[in-house]
Image (cartoon, rainbow, N blue to C red; front, side):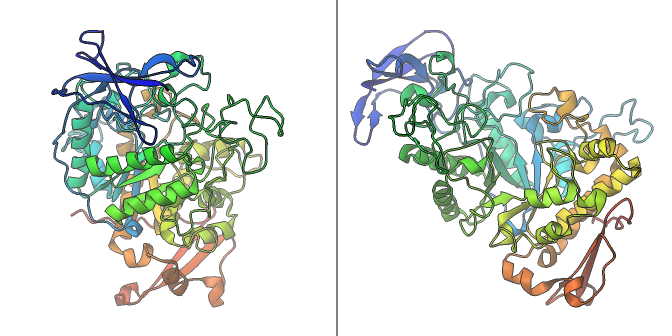
Length: 598
């Protein structure tokens, strides 16, 4: 750009008070403007200009560093210092994490939730909310005396909540149109869809109030972040989809054939030029499957990524980050980011998906590449060994008793597979992506071509058995909200824009599946009561203390897994804890553990 300006406004919409303040270039490609007046309550955008009208067509965009936007196509609000109090983060070591994933709207939008601010940040601050009696539950719980919302989460007992994206994403904040939030636009502003007012700093205040409520309950808060791409259009002629980065430094923040002419695997990244020809520079990489890839390895892009993470920790006391498509974030950036975050608090969690949504020019941050770098990855190997691939029907432990070798590696925190430490693996069997576990069982049952019959009771028993494996394996266990109720999305495989009826937590489920709810709650209580058994902090402890029966010369029935956890020092009752995990429907589900009601 040859000129950059700050454009000030008095209002969130319209041209009232529009003032263009030219900025001055300063070293290292930055621009600066001094305005000697109190700007609190004013709105602003940025305008970059150049003779090259394709790259700089004169579109006002929101500052990528803006911390409170009126919408993703709106304006940034200058609001000064928001002093909303947030209780300090709970002191929970990473190896003692029990992660509970939720979507802010899903958790409270049900008409029977008993929550006042349904679907909002504030909805997850409300206490003493109860299931409202209705035609489906009145005969079972006439008082509606079953907790919902935040109280239910506290009752379940997780130490961490992982919350689907709340960074400003591509949506209409005044619409009821459902979105998960994985099409980000601006990374430092909360999205107003979850706030009670979109034109002031409510989104900031109310998000802080929600985090404070979780911290007061002793629960850490992990952000689900989507730094791998943005909603900006790779079609540079679509000026309506120039939101920030491409309006200020076109193409710099994205991987193109100009910045990444040859991929790590040796392939040409340009659709129009041969390998030995100059690149066109217009071809955007699309390993996200969403149109572009954030170029995290570029110096200013890396700086932005790390600045953003540190901002959320310092301003909102966020306790960790789950990276969507972490495979697209270069390893060096992740390593540096994890180190800087751990300099602030060594208990901050950093983990993500070790895969991509398509071919990428960089070396993928995949399983194993995280070893010793300070961050973890989702364990899809353990997931697939238990339930089979989410992309088809294949043999799995819970329905067929197979894949024992993969299962055993997962039980040991994958230290003999792809981790250096059990804190590098997130063990799970269900998350927001793909079919819920219950729906997957139904799909598998319906598509089988053998004579084995699976009844509803079998599906529930398999559901419980899968939970036993996840919550007694070494590593960090993870579950999705509603999993404890055999959550169903009516078979929808990808519900990112499905209506509330598909995505919401139907609180009547809690009554209908209360035995499963209690079972999950008991497993969580068991794990928390015995971290020395189920939450070992390092690989050597696992090697020294866990033995499979076969390694001790003991026989094990077909399609079963049995192991001993040696305790030292433990009570006599805990001296040796044996676990026998039997496949279903041929075996028996372990008796439900008991949760302390106190």
